[in-house]
Image (cartoon, rainbow, N blue to C red; front, side):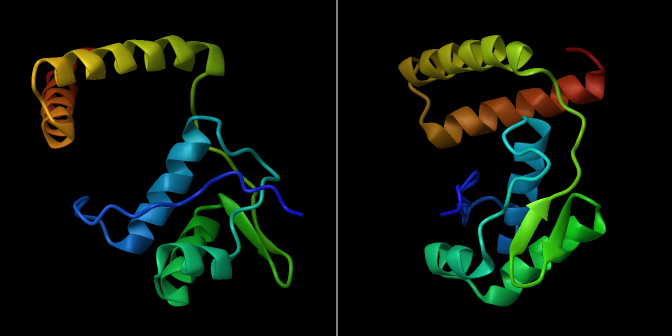
Length: 134
C-alpha cells in the first residue's frame, strides 16, 4: 500500500488553472520539505477521482514538473519526486508557522473573514517585496 504524501485541492477563486494549482502545490510542498526525493505523487487516476478533473490536466501538471527536473515518471509504477527546491530547515519553519497562526487568529478576531485575511496578507506581501524589506 502506497503512502499518500500530498493531497491536492482546487481553489476556484485562485485565478490559476487546475493544472497550475497542482504544479504550485507540488512546488510548495518541495520548498517546505513536505515532499522529498523518492516520495511518490498520487496516481493520476486517484487525483482525477478526488478532484473530478480531466486526466489530461493531471498529466500536463506532472509533465511540467518532469520538465523542470522535479519528478520522474516510471511507466506502470507512478510519478516520483526526483529533485528539490531551495527551502529552509523545518526548525526555522515551525516558529514562523506559529507566529502566522497567531496573526491569522488576531486578524479573524479583528473581523476579517478568510478572503479578508488573504487580501491583507497578499497586499502586504507584495508591498514588502517591492520595497525590498522583510
